[in-house]
Amino acid sequence: MFDDIPTRAWLYIGLAAAAFTPMRYVARHFQSARSERETLQPPADTNWRSPAVLARSVIALVLLSVLAVFIATPAAERFAKSPSFLPILMAAAGLWSLSTVVKGHVSGAIEPMARGASWIFHRDAQPKRFWASMAWNGLLGGAILFFAYQLMQDGPKQVLRDKCYNSTDSFPQQEALAACNKLLTDLEGERRADWIFARGSAHYMLNDYEQALADYRTAVRLNPENSSAHFNIGLVYEQLGDRRMASEAYTAAIKADPNNAEAAERRRVIFSGLDIVKP
Image 1 (cartoon, one colour):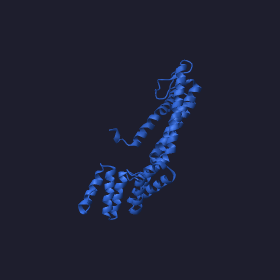
Image 2: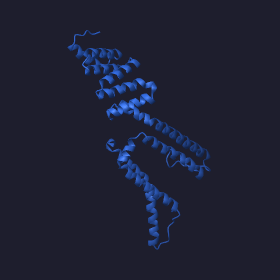
Image 3: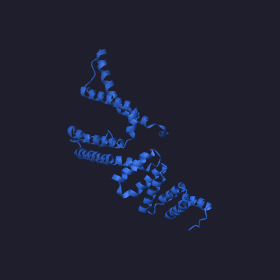
Image 4: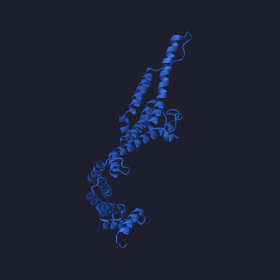
């Protein structure tokens, strides 16, 4: 049921939840001020009203309103799909956790993260729990920031990997080809065979069969047990009209992986039309 709710709707629900407390404070603040002017009864206790809290509440509502407008724009959609989105969210959570440590040091009270609003410890009344909560929030915030930094560093690399593999055809083949070349030039030296194989697939989809064949052969040389590379060599030879070489490539694919049913089927079709003796 919840899977049918768009991501943007969940974001608006979250913004509404975040806006509830400052909105309630602002409404209560102005309502109490109006009541003082309109009633002849003795004034109620208004010590809870604070210009600083009112200012913070109004600023929070303005920022949340701007964010709500931004969410509806194409720029927000692009940002949500960018590799920076998750690291920025994590960094914000980490900074929030660290800010509670600073606030706790100043105020003498702290709420341990992930425990709930009812778990608030005071330095004077509960020193052990207070300092344990300070340490917990500090360690949690530092850990989240560390992982956010790691994700930020790895984000561009992951985009290149996704484009190079292009397993769901989400990117134009020229972009996939450029990503593979970038990986082969700058990154992931230990996975060179994978990127060369993926680049061969980009060449194949672009009908550049000679380059595809060269890449698949290199992938096989680097990893002779790569059944998929042998199989794709067979596909290229079929496109080039050399069914005999294709059958040999399918045979190599089957030797590398006896469960490669597609290679076995393609070789069977070729054998049915050629005078080839099975090995």
